[in-house]
Image (cartoon, rainbow, N blue to C red; front, side, top):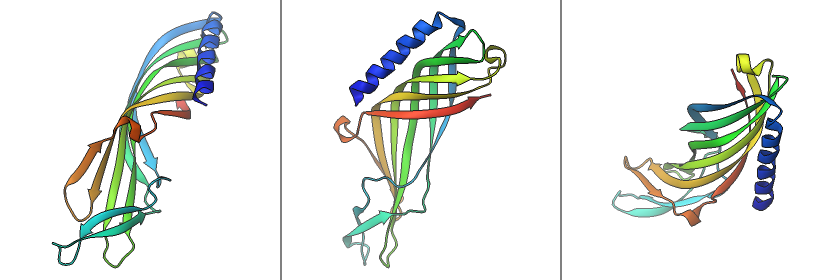
Length: 195
């Protein structure tokens, strides 16, 4: 799957370069912004077992925590891109590609179903670099820079961190994950509006 996608991505970049010979405008653009990730419960780690304070608090017991389905995790992030645009001669369509850096994450919450209520909020933060390729369309793109775009991106996650905030302790625990603990490549589809 990865080899087919990589071949397709390289083919699209080559086709864009060949088609760029027919372009009216070619330019580089920098894009900076904030990314906002809203995530539901993950499919993995459907249930967690953690050690929680007992009764009396000096006693420690193991309890099962289940995902809180109504929780919509919010994780703010940052995004920076260096993009190369090829606008076609009609000035109403074009393509772009480049390099994209994204610092984002997902957040989930788990809680006990027993009479004693405990919860844990777990956040995974990741640094990734991607290669986007997208098609854009809009009237007079060069003059107005207003267009809609749709594309695909291959991402490489080069660093990931995990943190947990538990309800029975004010300390925030976290760790850096090793490379073999997560999937390093992801594929994403995106669309948007440049206004």
